[in-house]
Length: 459
Ligand SMILES: *Cc1c(COP(=O)(O)O)cnc(C)c1O
Image (cartoon, rainbow, N blue to C red):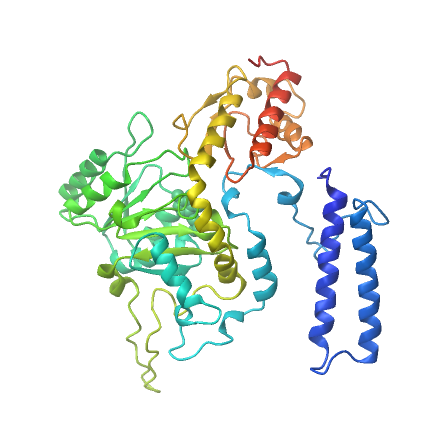
């Protein structure tokens, strides 16, 4: 794929890669500095860098048009530089420049362990300020204790593994994410789904009915209720507070799945009545994968974050305060540091959520001007992720186009827009999170342009 900005992108990455080569030279040299031989190599590289920077200043066009690769076989990834990316799961995981700097600085394996001191646990490290970050995370979602985890899924797993025993039922919604299923399955539990109402919403009443039904059927109360604040299929908003109340009436703890909220929208775990708040770093906190957060109350912290009790039979070894569900330590190196480096920005951006929703609604209003386009998610939107239906418009065009469904993603990528599910022209999802107003206008115009090109009615 060629972006109109290819030259700029190519030169920028060439410069970055050349700087990494210079960095490697410095790494290889003795503490006293560069040797005569290294000095020559260094000069060659800095001179090359100067050429690249000059070419970049001139707009990037120049000697070498091909994009550099990371290594042979691993091409450059430049979706975010080259395009407007509306891919549903990628929007809010896009890194901040701070996170990218953290990655290049802390990318080495166990880099977070430089100053790890007794009692040797990730969340106790004070330089870089990992311990403080844990406190801030708990505060951010208004819970008592937080841990970083390799993705929301590992948070689910820590909770189910602690609470669910073989044959126990766990309530999820009919819109549950596959990782919720797997976390229950791994613990030996049984998934019991709550049906949706006519508006594709999970109501507190439906949850209560399901709890009653499962309890009658199995003679045991379910062990846990999962609720996705915004589900991944429609990104409809579900009544998390009402559902938490119902769960507690039956003495069942509630896991609030904030994969699509924590990091983009303010989340108050205590107000919701959540026993567990789970967020995804790579989905919604501008962090490298795999990252996420599991926060809980003092009531559940001792159970979920229980420490090892095991003693070696030969050595008598014990590993003290290592937490079993966390496997001792969780996110090492660049992943965690990317999360920490983005955090100040992430905290701030949650305050702009209303504006993000406004942009999403503005785009969709324009999108609906293409006669026959429909919105499958609740509308007006309360989120930036939306499922739309273009069966009556682009899908009809696709039927007579030799590229079939691919014509739409082809047309869009020609206009600098990527992230649509390739070939999909009936129901598909897009996410406008983080796009500037200028990009929102650009995106709206691009869809209308393509519609007009294929003689669809645009109002
Ligand atoms: C993306 C998503 C997950 C999984 O998040 P990871 O951080 O990748 O594990 C879980 N639940 C929902 C609703 C999601 O959208």
